[in-house]
Image (tube, rainbow, N blue to C red; front, side, top):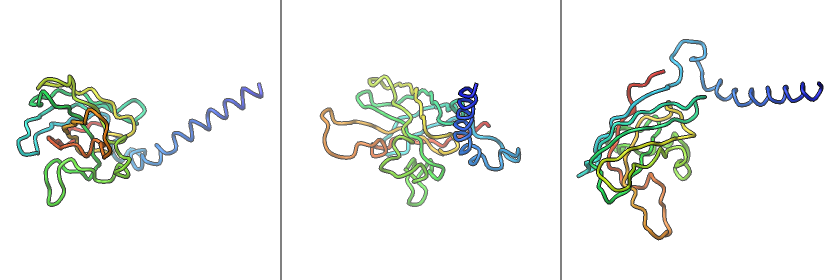
Length: 184
């Protein structure tokens, strides 16, 4: 009995430790004064680079428990011989060139640019060959409330690994869209 009570207390402490950061970030929403976290949204991704033809409609859904989201979408206009990925960008990112701020650029709100790939990467557009593609991605570390835009980037990686930066945010931007129709 004593071990069972101790195990129960440890389990409750672990749950409380995990729940505390979520409760602290909830802010006024916990009191019912503002809507809760975004559970669903969508993005219409349109060309932003000269000569780009890649377009897509993407639906975003929060994972159960609130951390991470899934993305599903269809797109067209892809170069049949190129590979593409989609990334999500922070709350200060913009869908079109705004002054000196390029569309779908890393705004720093998702962390250090050298390590933000994990928080930005959504998935690849498949099949690799073809002008029509499907996105079925999972972003495990970022919430829908932490992103404002989603990109399509051409990701032609050399066949043989070479020194250099191959983070997805350095791949050529093709198209970008703003996260809209947020549902709480």
